[in-house]
Image 1 (cartoon, rainbow, N blue to C red):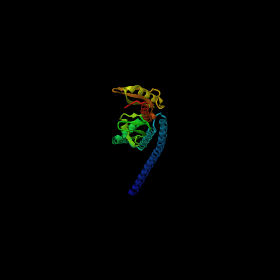
Image 2 (image 1 turned 30 degrees about the vertical axis):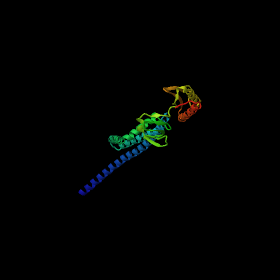
Image 3 (image 1 turned 45 degrees about the vertical axis):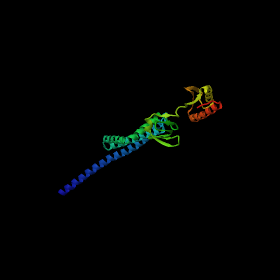
Image 4 (image 1 turned 120 degrees about the horizontal axis):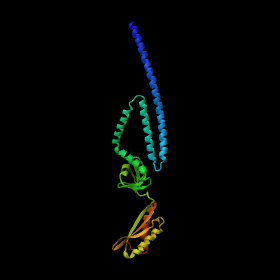
Length: 269
């Protein structure tokens, strides 16, 4: 009798275990299937939303391609993380602790990469505010050159000597920048020193040169004035020229002024 009872109890226990295992299998099968579906739907949704975001950001005037891609990737991976946490919640995982862990990990990474994050933040501000663009010549207290590329971490420049220069974005953002290419015109002042008796002839010659040069702007009109008075007089020719032709025009004007003054027999220092 004892053997029969033990056999009966064993069969009943086995049946109960099988029933429970079957119920758990069905329950987790639905959970797994739901998790898979949620992952697929979340992945598709993240791709679609990030694509829409990229198209929308790209239409905003003045938004750089690099900045548009950065925001798009940030949205995409943020949505994937949200979907992953939601899937874990389907299996009873305490997502609050995961979020807290991710927050702590993000804080630790931020502290470890503080300098890098500063460069990224500065790169975003440079791409939004656009104090300079590719192809423009800039100068700061420590960096100068023609901008070749603006990245999220650093900006590439080419110096006047043809050298490659990489400047961290935080360096460019935290210092005054002079952009020599932004404005359409630039002013130049050419000064010479002449004897007092040659003043009128020198002023007339310089003004004629400015009016004859096609690169010199007519408005504002070129001006000639006396800068300093002493044993000799310093005369200054001031004119505006298109930015793209500034270097060539200033050099040509200096040579032309020398030749014209010599032709008229006007002495200068």
